[in-house]
Structure formats: C-alpha cells, structure tokens
View 1: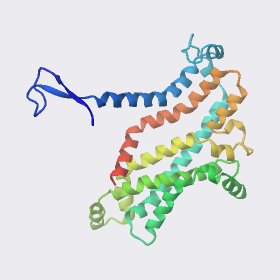
View 2: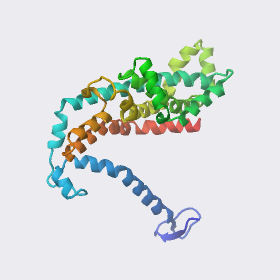
View 3: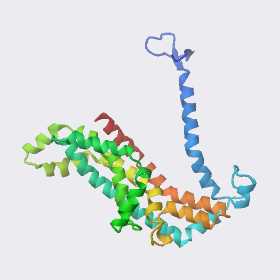
View 4: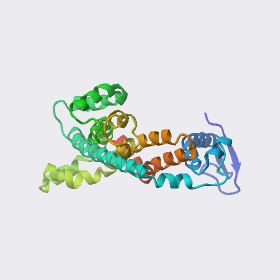
Length: 298
C-alpha cells in the first residue's frame, strides 16, 4: 500500500479535502527514479559510442570513461570519406527497404482474411503464425543456409530479404490481426450497400484506417533488418559479394578488424551505422505507440 501524506498548499484543496491539503504520493518519486535508471542503462551505451567517436585513441586509453579533451572530428571525417562505408549504407538500405516492403504487403494480405473472414482452419492458421515466434533464426540457421544454396540465393541480397520477411511475419500478423478486427463491421456493410466490392473496401477504407498498424510493423521490420547481423553473416559474408557492398553490421565488424588500433574511428563508424535506424524509429515513435495500442484494444 502506497504511503501518503498531506501537504498544506494555502489554496482550495481537492474535493473532499476542505483544509486545502493535496495528497502527495511518496511512490511517484520511486517510480521516476526507476524510470531514470532504466533510461540511463538504455541510452548510456549509445551516448558513450557517439561521444567516443570524438576522442582520440590515446585519450580513450588514458581515460575510458571521460569526455573528449579535446574534441576531434577526424574520426567521423575518416569514416564519411571512406567509400566502403557508403557501400555498406547502400546495402543496408536495400535490405531494409526490401524487407519492410515485403513484410507490409504480405502481412496485410495474410492478416486481412484471418481478421475479417470466417473460414475453416482460420484459427489454426493464426496459431501457426503465432507459433513462428518460438523458432528463432539460430535454430533454423543450418537448414536455411542449405536451402538457400539449393535455390542459388546464397550470397545474394534476396537470400537475406526473403528469410527476414519470413521471420518478421509472425510478429506482423499478431499486431495486424487484432487491429483489423477492431474496425467495425458496420463500415463494411455500409460500403457494400453503396456498391463497394470487398477489394474496394480493402483499398479505400480498410488500408487508410489500418495505417497506424502498418506503420508500426513497417518500422519494426526496418529497424530489425537494419540491425540484423546473424543472417547477413551466414548468407553474405560467406558468398562472393564484395565487402564494399556488405550491410552495415558486417561493415562494422570488418572496419573494427581493419582499424583495430584506432578505437575512436571504430566508435565513430559504429555510431554512424546506428544513427539512421535510431532517427527513423524516433520519428515514427508516436505512430508505433498508436499502432500497438490499437492492436491491444482489438
């Protein structure tokens, strides 16, 4: 039970408290403290990497936890003028864009009939998608690699995009199905009375209303693909694709190996590699929260 006390304000208090006292909940500062600690644990490493990129290697070795003294920009300039970095960025954009597009299109196509139609095996199909969450990529790594070699997709971007879509679909379906179910059936009935076909209802009404959910799954797929490491490692790093066109997670590893003596440059490369996904996620944060709330309410 939360301990409370009364603090005199000198003004009219809350209803039922004519003495002009307001309730002070001693539990709130504790909640804020926990939130600040969690935020610090999450943001601290990111800030350390970004700030570390402005330090020299000697400065980092002398004082690993300190601030730049002085601030140097050579590390970021070195990374930004490296052609391989921009090749890695291009590769990550291709993989993330292809994965996001595939997840959104296939996700809404699969979630729509499950959420809006009644047919035999619907619940079993939804259960299968849900069960997909229990099979991580590490379990399927070996058979997936063998399958991609058989299909001649090993060492290609498609060999990364297609499995990424498959592993992202369970989460996508789980988010979109309850979201689509929450759309009133009266809208579809009214559209049918007006002469709109089911396809017309899908394109003109359902898609605009489900946009928060689509943005949510799209952002999650984009960030997951951008930060993906294991799948590109299994598919691309062992293929014939030049290192200049590896995605950023692999590029970070290659760069840190090549410039292992330049810690500041490695931190600068790492921070530049994660900034696009971080900015993209923060820009769509409100839409993500709205989409997840709609899924929970549904």
